[in-house]
Image (cartoon, rainbow, N blue to C red; front, side, top):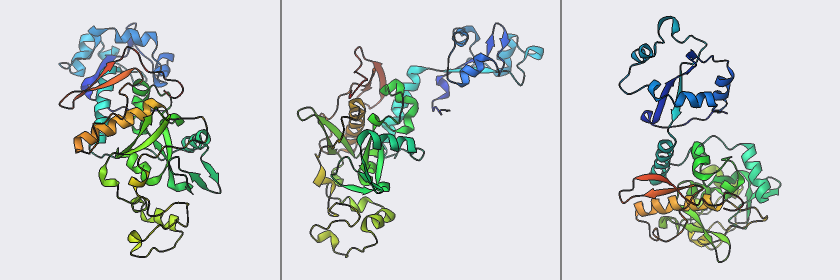
Length: 337
């Protein structure tokens, strides 16, 4: 599976694909290993040759001329021409900056449609399949039509290339990195308007509505027209429905008057021993807290996370620039860590 990595050109190191003075054949074991994401000792040897690296001052022809690899020795069609190394720390730092920028600017993460594997993994891990096309939301004690309960990433799939170095996730679709939530919660989670905070005293993950403008808003009003139709099962609401008392949805066991404020502080409900990874919950809460400070949301300075990640920590300076530093004691990457 190919992976798209976004980074600045200045973070790339470019070397000629030469091994023992010969261009690497595209069908060689070394080339096949590179395409599979494997880095052999021969490739390590290429990256150690700083004298062969393409510099900012070189043009390609001059570079090849200095290498003595022009004319008959120039690379042919079925040979590799260059190998590229991405600086790990530069990639990580710029990737983290991208995550923070997206969170702060209300950039809703866009990723490919959820795979059956991802959703099936969550349904099995958290036992949320209620049968008959219904799925349980892990926050509300209610089941909904399956299309209205969304697999919600804590560390989003858009940043898959940072999942292993930053979060120690071998699989971005790991059930420990996601929750099954009613659509309005999923949307707010993606936009870092809500987060979940681990409560050690009760060993529970509790909802924290960080954007105060949501508190009085009905969950029903956050659904699009098609979702509202599914929930109402083609019934029509009276125009003054907002001012009336409780009104249960025909398509689910939920009061249509329920607001975000009504469920603020509510704990996730688990039917199995499976839990989301705390490091993923903490990092999402950390991003939400950061966004809240930028937007002046009340309560954004409260302690709602632990800033330690799996082997890295994010350092935020006073001017909100970011860098990554190694931590001496990475958190446990097993179980609920």
